[in-house]
Length: 137
Length: 131
Length: 108
Image (cartoon, rainbow over all chains, first blue to last red; front, top):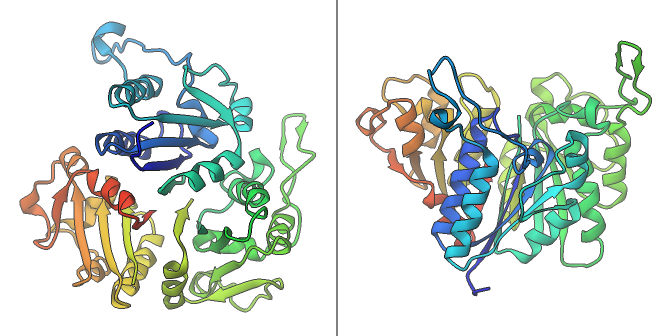
């Protein structure tokens, strides 16, 4: 791992209900653009962002089948950020709050997203240069 | 690292999680913080979260169909836990006043600050985590 | 003196707490702190010349740099020329730069 600075992000929102989710992912992307290592603590609804069983679907109102609609999925955004980090030799760590995962039945996550707890958030923050938390409403 | 945690939401997860999720998170992190003399967590209650300074009873149990909640949240206990863990707890006076709560007795250990006094509170923290 | 960056996502027309957030930002600036406010999402709505929300003018202070997120503006079809003259447009890299320079970055 290079000696670039590390930023921690804590996030609480689920995949499809809030504009904050989009802004959060844009911030992660911008952090990698700035050559920062990234650590994410996904709390409450955010524990579903990395759920592996998210599936694209068609949309009859749009007149699109599944392939044409190419519906955004947060698991795909995470995978894309993981790939971007690898290309830039940056670390991109992701921990889901384990109890939040259990409650929602979203245990099946994409590779690179792990299970942890609030102590990991404090550890992440302690190991990082700076931290941003984004609560839910 | 001194981190000021700000909570302005109230009753957001209280029924489903059977606690206030951020007060729970802080209690969990405090177990790590207590292990050294350098780190400190502080809590600022503002907005609707000022109601948490007035809680005296356990939350009412929810009943859905024949399902009855047996372990409703006890925010009163959560706040007491924070205070007994030596976490400074602040509440914004104007937010109490707006809600007609400024004359209510606060439990020992909660410090009232006005909005101008938030300036030094924000200045002294290394990081500010708004939930 | 500290440096703060607030990511202001809340819309004052639907969220009453936004007014007190503006006041706090104003107090921090008045106390001599350098403050940047990044308007995002519906937080950009009071930034137009035609918008009327008087408490927003508290953010027009010499110690406050006020910017609006380009993507949020594009979504709402707000052109830069429609913004109050003191407000510049930005990408979110401004937030990351602030985090990496050790500023206190706060999501509102």
